[in-house]
Length: 470
Image (cartoon, rainbow, N blue to C red; front, side, top):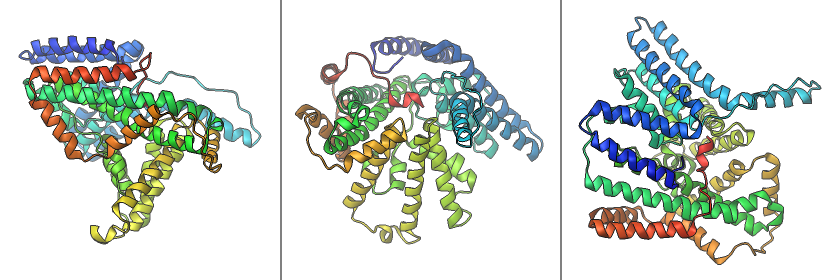
């Protein structure tokens, strides 16, 4: 059930009305939201609903077991159980075939040819997101950051809450559980903000991201040899804009949907292509994932507490695993490794001085270099194989400039996507504030105009969100 379809609009309309009719019946409302969330997930494949229920149930029980444990050894045993259980399920569905294929390829180079063992199991949508969310709850209980949640139904709703279920943001238990446990209150201004976010998200996704994907990015990556160096460069920029508009657009719709139900999610993007270096980029891009990796992986590995060399190693391991989290492919691992190496270099260049002394390059140069490093790494992220990535990078060396595929309309959308990203944030905040203060008829006119833009630039079929595959 894609956010950019009428099916979702109809589903959400029913959920919105019924959930607010049950606002004073907190338990009934919670059960309704849980049932609606499982229905939302079942629309993709009902066979995996027991998986998300079972994973949630196990972690809720393990969190309680840690709280009741009498010794540190028992607490560590229960913590190890949740890590093994969650990563085991994630590894089986997402990485089993990848591991078998990689091992078979390695053995083949050594002269061995084992029988094929690939299971070709379907990947449950959103498994990476809800696994990380549920596992973080048990880790937080173990660390003493939160108390074990007493209400089983509220915990199930926390994991399955449909706006963030399949592609994030990865919401922390301490942020969402208290909101689900409380009694919601409808705020008209909050509702207006939600509608603004949904409209902006749809424009980002459909009018910019999908348009660039279908008319530039997909065509160029499918056949880079048929395109000039200039067109390949434009397509690389196009993919950087596409993946940002696609994922941040999804996040905007998710935050807006939750807000209409009285729940506020944390921010997940903060103009990442304005970053002056890679460390700044990862503070701005997919914030819920980058902070999760920092708090639950990087810190657990030792962070920066064990010397410079160990800090660099921890950065590399964190980003390599972060790359692998995105997909069962060595291209994702190398993509993560490039970002890990970039973070190591960034940290080394910054040194131990004050922030003023760390700025060795003018801001505009830092933004330019960071954006192009990220864009170059996106090529590996987008390419299905190293061979395709090698061909794609090779096209740049031809220095050819013919560009029959770069139509004025296409360049206009690409330019709009880039320009809108770099406008001052105060402009966006002012637009949102003014929309919220508009009378309802004026808001309706603005939303209708946004709908017309989306309709004119939309493809015949709804395009899935990029991050659904993770």
